[in-house]
Length: 164
Image (cartoon, rainbow, N blue to C red; front, side, top):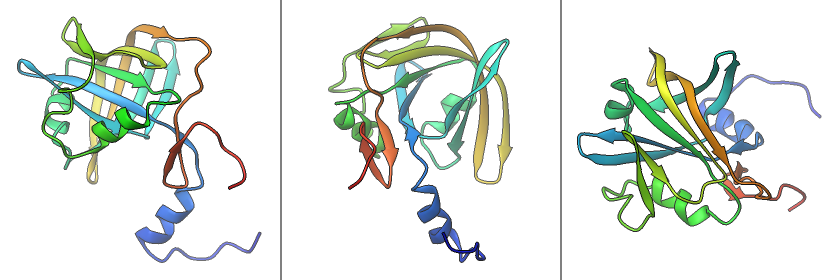
C-alpha cells in the first residue's frame, strides 16, 4: 500500500469509496395516494435501543420531498437476484411501481420479495450540504432466511465479493 496522498476532487473520492461494499436498499414512501421509491446504499443501523436506522437522501431526488415530509417509510434490503428491481428504483423512471409486486403496509408501500423489510417512522431529519440525513425509528421487521444480500461494490451490483 502506498502512502496516503491528497484528494484531487470528487472523482478520487468516488474511486476510493467504490472499494467499500454496501448493502443495496430500496426505500419507499407515500406521496399523496401514490407510492414513491429510490435505491440507496447509504443506509446503516443507527441505534439498538430504540431500534433505528440512518440514511442519506439527495435533495435532487424526486423522492426527497415525500420521504422527508415526516411520517413513515419502508426499507427493503435487497437480495441476490434482485438486480433488475434495483435498477428500476435507481432509474429516473416516473412509474417505478408499474411492473413491481407491492402492497400498502398502512401508509407505507411494501415491495414483495425483499431479503428484509423494515417499516420506520421518521424520528429526526436534518439537512447537510446537498443531502438530508434521516433517522427512522424501526416499528416492524421481517426477513427471509437463506438469501444472500445484494451488494454494491466497485460500481456493480453483486452478491459475491472476491477476485475479479
